[in-house]
Image (cartoon, rainbow, N blue to C red; front, top):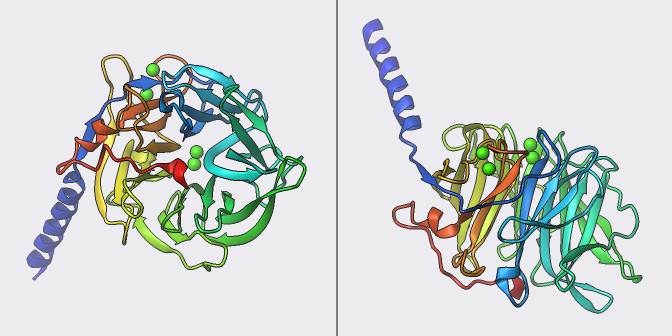
Amino acid sequence: MFKIILSLLILSLISCTNKDSNIQINKVFASVETEPVESPGDSADDPCIWVHPSDPSLSWIIGTDKDETSAGLRVYDLGGVEIFKTENGKMNNVDIRYGFELGGEIIDIVTAGERLSNTLAIFKVDPEKRTLMDIAAGQVSLGIKVYGSCMYKNINTNEIYAIVNDKNGNVEQYLLVDNGQGLVNATLVRTLKLSSQLEGCVADDILGNLYIGEEEKGIWKFGANPDDGDNGVLVDELGTHLTADVEGLTLYYSGDSTGYLLASSQGNNTYAIYKREGDNQYIGQFSIADGKVIDGVTDTDGIDVCNLNLGSQFPNGFFVAQDGVNDVGNQSFKVVPWENIAISFKPPLKMNNTWNCRQY
Ligand code: CA
Ligand code: CA
Ligand code: CA
Ligand code: CA
């Protein structure tokens, strides 16, 4: 009897090991890296992609630098050259939405959580001057010690929200409002409470979902609207596909209701991919390996992805990831053409689609 139990135990141990080692990790390579951030140590955190309204090749990568002394947002062109920066505090995560109405003008709006003063930084994109303009109505104070942040746009009402979270599992959702004087304020409309440290988050504007990473637990899905209640579903738990911390989350839209949810699995330097629709079925995993010119990516915090043709360098859009260790200089962001990722899977992931984030 003991022998049978022992052999059953050994068998189950072997199958666990097999299960883990059976996860295929596709290797892809970056084609561009941004200039390193100015600050040493763990300073870069989260990128977002801004799509230019008429010439997609003039689009940007906006990154955060969270160093205490010289922090702010960093704006890079698609060659990775820094073309603008703000110096307004310890910016942790950054996100963007299109079509905010401010004083009768339609603008592209960027928000970031500022960790020294616990405020929400709010900017508008100036496509002509190629700068970010501060449009926060003074100090837009938050009720929690802000850590992660992201944005949501309800496409039926055109309301745009900033969602912030903290290291104790608290989430606050703010409606962004025109204050009538050319500036933007934020009104608290909802709170959520999870168990432990949060950070990465992303909202699906079309399907109305809000995904939040609980760093040592997994990925949660909530309704993204303020009256959607506080019942979350655990999309995936740490273990098979995700190794702590769960960090950046982003969505690839391949149409109104299809695409992919991507997650940074920081602890094993990979990215997990799930279906955007339905129950977010797991698809697979990839890593960004050392290339001939550009080093690979480890210890990733924030990520973003865009499906659009962004010029000859990126005809199928690209994925961008913070790199925890740069081979030369301070941390940077690495850029991978989407087709490199798409064709590494069998069958290939969707690409070359025309779904346009600016249309909403
Ligand atoms: Ca974190
Ligand atoms: Ca982070
Ligand atoms: Ca690296
Ligand atoms: Ca490098």
